[in-house]
Structure formats: structure tokens, C-alpha cells
Image (cartoon, rainbow, N blue to C red; front, side):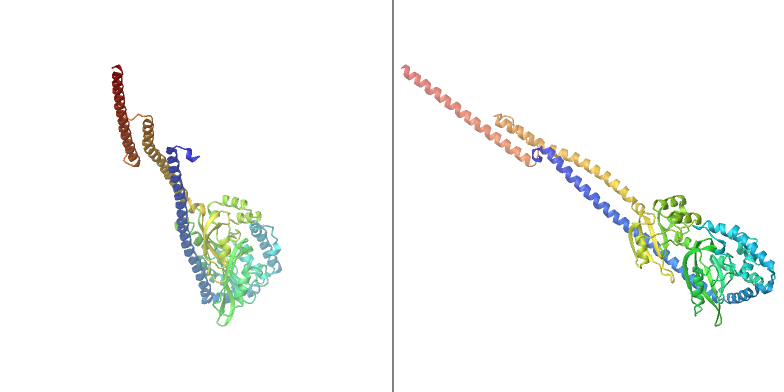
Amino acid sequence: MFGRLRIATKILLVTVSITLAVIVVSLMVSNYSTRMALEQEAFNRLTAVREVKSQQIEDYFQSIRHQVVTFSEDKMIVDAMRTFTDAFRSLEGELVPRKDDYALAAGNLEAYYRNEFLPRLERNLPSGSRLEDYWPEENVTQLLQYLYISENPNLTGEKHRYDAAKDYTSYTAAHRRYHPIIRSYLEKFGYYDIFLVDAESGHIVYSVFKEVDYATSLLTGPYSKTNFARAFREAREAKAPDFVSIVDFDPYAPSYNGDASFIASPIFDGEEKIGVLLFQMPVNRINDIMTNRQGWTDVGLGESGETYIVGSDFTMRNQSRFMIEDRENYLGMLAEVGTPAEVIASIDSLNTSIGLQKAETAGAEAALGGATGTAIFPDYRGVNVLSSYKPLQIEGLRWAIMSEIDEEEAFQHIEKFRDRMIMLGSVLLALAVYLSYFLALSLTRPIRFLGESAEQLTSGKLDEPVARLSGDEIGDLAENFEQMRVELKGTFEEIERKNNELEQRVQERTADLDEALAA
């Protein structure tokens, strides 16, 4: 088939095929090289962000450890612990309440639970709640919650602004003295709450924020099975003043089922352990670090990048960027990837992904297993991401940090580069076709002329000279053809001359013969 084609067509096909093959191979090699370069650059950037954020988080938790130990050893806190404990134990005796006083306090407090606490809590629970699950049975607890929660004139979330109740008990005197100082400490360092807990009874004898765990016992009360109680018990059993217990985030009913983490250290008065100091960890501060105060682009994470923490249960420990930036689309995405409806409802009602958003990805599994690395895999949205991951070194917590960006965004410049390469390749291909056409023309024209000259030679037309149209081998061939023409012409002329001479001799002989016969 190919052998039957004209030379010009063959030249055109071969030239175009070779050019096209070179363009395709070059495009593939360039595309691969560009992708590898962009991938490495993206991983380097993600790893740099990961290292900065992991250092910030680890330093932050280390500073909290130092703060809880230092604060628990502060003389003011030691004095406050002993004063609040003594005042807590003597409260009923000082108030000398009558039975109807108890009934009044309990009724007022129950109304607060039913009208304020439980409705707020139920908005964040997948199922309903019952009063008896949270109701404090002890009289002293009911009295203090009545004085500092239900009778507190400040709104829910503002109860900590109440310096003291209006009675004249030693507890109120202690609260008036120490509460502004401890509240100022909380506000300065951004903690959610600070607690003083009696080591003997487990009663929360003081709380800054005054939620419904206030004045309950962490040994026998309604929250004795929580991670809060576990942190208390671990610190309660400690022998050293600098012991620190930390527990991971977990839904906590007094905080309306929001995720809460606690850090605890024992309080010693000399050699005597008198209580435990606990901080409820600030979620906002962790969010600020991990989201760079929502300045993702400022640290090179573009439009889709984020850093987040994954706990040992594979749920996130800070807000998802996509929850913050576009809540409705984020919730819709959760439904699309098959997230259980009750989880979506909890994320929606609590307005947080902390402790709820599962991120059980290949990178999270590797990091929680102790590995550090980079990889491309689907994230918790089912979207392929470039990820840089590592385990966090925080004593008492098994956490991993993930620094990720969507694969589409990381490689978006490849599309532009490929488009430019295709455009350039198209131009080169057109140029190759154009040049190959003129190359074929330059080759076939003298060959075609030689063919015509050969036809003239074979037909005996030797007068038309064979012109040399090029200086290459074809030109040499044309020159040889011209020499052959000249030689052939000379030979034919010589033959014709001899034929003429022979014919003349024959005529002369014939004439002589005729004369002889006539004589």
C-alpha cells in the first residue's frame, strides 16, 4: 500500500508522522515532569505548614501543662481550694435552710433545668433527654446551683459575670474574694472553664463558668462517668505535685453536649493533697492555630487547603475549613458521601465538626500508627488530596496532624501548561506539513522533469537539453542525463552521417554500374 504512494505523499506522511510522534512524546514527558515538579512543590509547602502548625499545637499544650501545674502550686489557689472546700462543707449549717427553703430552691432550679438547660441540650442530642439523668440529688448542690445558676441574674453563657450571691455565708465571701481573680486568669488565657474539686468528696466546690456540673460530685454525681471525672480521678491519685492528667475531647452534657477536653493537676498544701485544679480546654484557641485564624491563603493553602487534627477515634479535633467557609455545601457534601443522618444533624445543631466529622483516611491511619509522610488519597469528602501527615507529640493524647490541598488545585497549572503545549504542537505540526510539502515539491519537481526528459530521450527527441535544476544528487543525475543526451545525439548524428555517406557511395556505385552497363 505504502509502496504505491507517490513520493510527495510518502514524504508528507513520514514527516508528519515523525513530527506528531515527537510532539506527543514531548508533551507526555513535559506533562509528567511538570506534574512531578508541582507535586514536589506542593508537598514541600504542605510539609512546611504541617511542621509549623504541629510545633504551635505541641508548644501550646506544653504551655497549658506548665500553666496548670504552676497555677495549682500558686499560694492563692491553695488558699482558695481550702477556703472553698471548708465553706462548701459548712454551707448548709450557715444557711440553716428550712424544708420549704429547700423546696423553693429545688423548684426554682428544676424550672431552670426544664426551661433552659434541657431545651438547649436536646438541640444537640440525637435522642431526647431526661431530667433525672442530670438532676443533682444532694441538697448542698441544689442550694449552690440555685444561688449561682438559676438565681443568677445573668443569662446563660454569662453566669461567670456574677461575682457573689446576696447571702452572708463564708462561701459567698470566698466567691467574692477569689472569683474575680480566677475569672481574670481564665479570660487572659482563653480557657473554657476552671474548676476546683475537693480531693476527698469529688465535689466541684468552685467553677468559673457555672454550668450544671457545678457543685456536683465527680465520684458519685451524674457526671462521674465522664472524661472530666476520669481526669479528676487520675490527678486525685497522683503522688507528685507536678503530675498532669489530660483527657481527649468527648461530648459533655453540661456544655450542651459540645466536645470538651480537660487537663488536671493535684493541689497540695504542704504534704497534704487537698484538691484538684482542672482546666476545660479552649476549642477556639486550637481552631485559631489550625485555621491560621481562617487565613489559609496566608500560609500557602490556596482555596482548598487546610490543616486539621485527627484523634484516636478518627474524628476531627478542630473545625473543617469547608464547614467554616460554606456550611450549607459542607452539610450537603456529608450527605453525598454517606455520612449518617444523625451525625449530620449533630454537626448542624452544634455548628461544629469537632468530634463528629470522621476522617478515617489512609494518611490518618498511617499517622495515628506512628508514620510521617506524604501521599495522595481521597479525604473525608471523597476528594483526592495531596496530604502531608505526622503524629503529634502531646503527652496523654494520640493525635495526628494533616496538612492537605485538593489535587485539582495543586495541579491546576498543568492544564494551562498542557493547553499551551498542545497549541505549540499544533503550530509545529502545521509548520512541518508546510515544510514537508515544499520539501516534497523540491524533490519531486526535478525528478518529474528528469522523467519527462527520459521520455524525450526514449522517443528520440535529443535536441531539448536536460537542465540542471538543483545542486544536489538529483542535479548530478540531471547532468548525467544531459551528458547521455549529448552522447546519444552525437552517436545518432554520427550514425546518420555514416548512413548518408553510405547512401552516397551506393548512389555513386549504382551510377557507375549503370554507365558500365550502358557502354
